[in-house]
Amino acid sequence: MAHRYKFLILSLIFFIPVYVWAQNEIIKITYCYDGDTCTSSKGEKIRLACIDTPELRGTRAAPEKARAARDHLRSLLAGKEIHIKRIGKDRYNRTVGELFADGLNVQEKMVADGFAKIYKKYAFQCAWSK
Image (cartoon, rainbow, N blue to C red; front, side):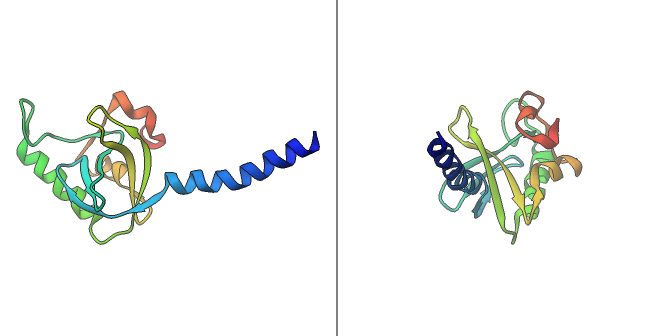
């Protein structure tokens, strides 16, 4: 019985840091299409979790506001160390995740600065948006 507990404890000691590291990877953002979608240097498409920004194109397009949101997002990310907390994939197979620029939650800052709204349908995914 004691052997089981030792194995469990050793397993937790090994796997918890690996899980935390995988959830908090450093990435390089090379391009932001709009205020809530970016591409990493590895070609990974990333949809910023828990926020929604104006659309550049389509029936609900608001190009001026969309460009302002995109430009603000780019300014938040420029020249900073970017960490990603991956949440999952969306219906377009983009990675859904929270981005942190030098420790600052990018999504929360986009909302606070008035460039994004909390995406109510998915707000449960981010502790700050509840």
